[in-house]
Image 1 (cartoon, rainbow, N blue to C red):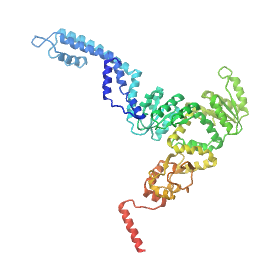
Image 2: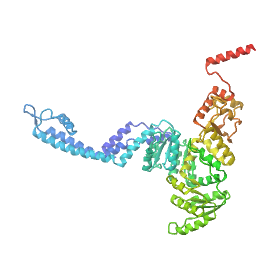
Image 3: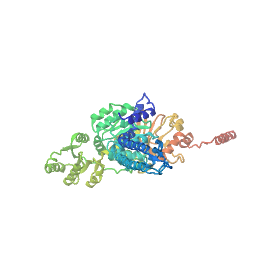
Image 4: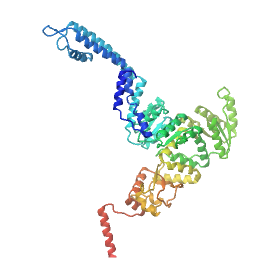
Length: 599
């Protein structure tokens, strides 16, 4: 950095910057974010160096020339302006303010010089203003300003937030659900158009978003990786290498933060797990799992999708059981092989149809072969990476066999209307699936232990649980939260936990009227390494149990009051009205003593 102005500026900022803290990974991340605030100012100095020098030279020459030009005072005696008077005159003249000639009227020579200086300053100002306008249109300058605003927004966040890497379909759905839940987040994406779309999505809270490659550690640091309120990192980009890099960086710099990352490769997933314990989501593997659950229990699939949706999402429709018989899978690569293996594991006869020839003019022959395969099948799955190809396959399958059950992999959310027009019986959008699973992992860790147990309980059990949830909580997705029955978090019910007299039914009573149950259900009780799914009201609770509760927001507040207040708990559990104030307690004790004396 050979520019003296830049050297001076950097020294000034270096002197004012606080000493970096040492010793922790969080401190290292914070130190990285402290190196960026002066980037915009340094860029201005670089781009405006020549215009500023030109203006300074013009002003200096104008002042010096006016000082040397001979003049006259009011009596006609020779008089020259001193440096200060020339500087003062040129200051208001060059800035177009104009206060007149001081301290005496100018001579023709002075006016000639001033006229020359005015035109010279106009040229200098035009050059400077043009440079400023060009600078404001410079992409690097605008990015520097945007980055500075972004850093300030992140630094001022005073509540927990999530760091979301990538802003594709999955992240958009997740961000919308998080915003509905009142949770804050920060977004980083390498695509400038996607970052610009964050403001257009109109989230309730101000959402900081930055253009940058998440593989750069500095970018993650600027995005708040070292912020004390950062509570987790979610990387859902379509690039496995980027997701792996984010997982590695977070595990090394902030091993205390949970990480959820997307991966379409098992090899990359194993590399991710080498760094800490990240949660890895593979949407392509989930397609086969969802089809298997739908084959076993449509009600279980309905319940799982509903519980992993955002709060207040309407209850999704219940699918009819897919037919059993010959299935045809049309796809390519590892995804097609794994989907075929999943379906065969359910005892289905599965045939794989390739797509050779579609790119070299043999598509008509390939379509005829595909039609013959479909003619004897009961179900067809279009699972390529192109929505155009999938839609063509679905239309071909419908024409060859109108009674066919068709399933499809939808790659882009914008094509939803096209898939609906074709008439898909079962579709999977990877972005939506990822958003549901990540939301479930973020909302409640106990939920992820509950969901795998749902398909094992059978269709009738799932139907009964859905009916109970609708009866208690309505048709919108209930709020899910975890309750730990510890002395610290459930002090109000501690006496009944110690004696083993507290049941699920007693706990879920309304504090205002204990005869009316809360609008909530306990979905699971976890005691150590064991658990009970959807316990009955008579199930006895013990100290240390963790509960997965589903209910309304009002029910959550009421349950929190029962767990925290022993007076409320006494009424809810036993129906006793305990005086709350000191005076009423003394009166109650005296009245109880008089009654005992009469007896």
